[in-house]
Length: 274
Image (cartoon, rainbow, N blue to C red; front, side, top):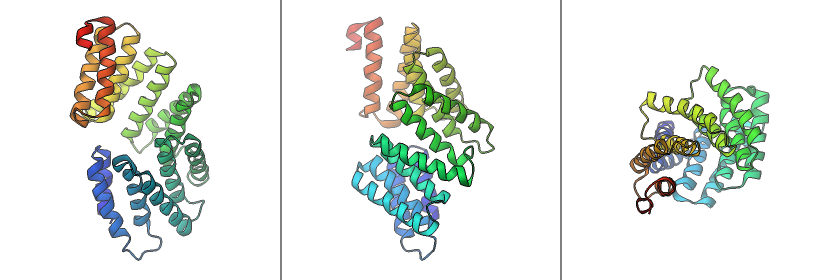
């Protein structure tokens, strides 16, 4: 069960969500057979299958049912003040964020942070994803200054942590750029995006989905600063990354094409834009 869970995590981290779902469901099947108390494997697998069920199969009902089961088992076997319970609250909050229920998502993140703050401290690596989730909801609500303040604090914590969570750092930098773009602070956006791009290139992750997002945000910022040729080149690179990662029919590819077309139409050949 633990091996299947780790395989699912690796596949998910690599963006192979369908493969991750297969491993996670195998993990869940194995974990349900274990006569362990507490059964952490079962909790982890329920959590993983719950999130992936929605991301891959768009099955909201199954996802919520599995996450509720994980939360119930965590409460029964660990109690409501345990970090394991907080971890499931965080995953449930992520699910609510993805489905657009920002009120419930923020309540979940806040509750998880209260537990973690008491048990491990608010600056502990186990709180990083919670802070990231809170910042994203503040962004969705238009609370850009609040989001930026928490993201800058998180950026420092991640940078100083002995646990080098590069994916978290990339997410922090991308979220910072999103907030700066909405505030028309284009040079600040470019600064954090260049930092994120260096991390991606140093790891050889040039074809990962987040690299496409970095390139798109760089293109948008440069276009708004009047650097139209740079913007078009960045959109072309973003398009190649998204097509490589998702395939030519994915919604992300359509979004890049639409934005690329607008830049070309505004500053170049309208027929090519069409």
